[in-house]
Length: 365
Image: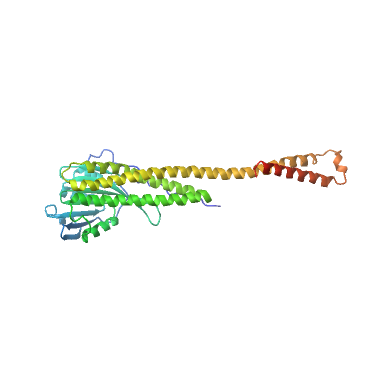
């Protein structure tokens, strides 16, 4: 007996935002997300235009004592937001608003921005394709941008930002010469680049699936279409609110957003518009692919039904003659003919030949 193939279930935490338990006081920090057991890691990179003054990994928030007052720019990467005690300590030390801490711990938040007196709070989503399962992984990146520091909160170890760390260490590009708003721009730029990578992967999948639909459509093709639609759903869920955030950033008059950086945020905003336009085109193609799949399957079914109908039609008159000569009457004139048996088969062959010629002329064969 053939085993049924099971489709991978949709990970609803990627689509459905969740809040704290009912009755919780607003501002209560509660971790909402996938279960995590790994230790929280805090990496600090302190630099200015000329030198790297500090690069270290700390294990306690107390080790950050004096960092906000020190000169230079500090990029503090917090890998893991499930440790609520450490998260609250960071919040108290950097005076992060309780509602912002609540959003950091809630990994189902949509991209958003909040402008406070001393800092700007941002939430973005990074999308990546797992090289083994080919499924999309979604992780939340929250940022607190102060006058001389940027704290980025990640669900797991942020390997995708290693290239930015390398650029800072090797003093390549403008990041060492600019303020914290430019550092935030580069982080967002990397996130948006991953959206482009995902869109390109979806485009390649669409081309492969279209070829399969034309040559040999099957259940695998249908599953591929649903997987593509799921990926496009992830992008749509993240890119639309991200566009709103970037639009607000480029128009913000907050003291931490400098005029020379607005053009870069505008560039990010333009990229989101480009992604949205591409996304709509791919969604139309995907809908067309489903129609093509249904049409191809229907066409194949019609071809099968046509062949079966032709065979049935041919055998209808033959069955009639066989029924007539199979009746149990005593007197059938043809039973006494010497060549009656051969005459009977001759009639059968003539009828079959005539019907086949007729079907051929009608182009039913």
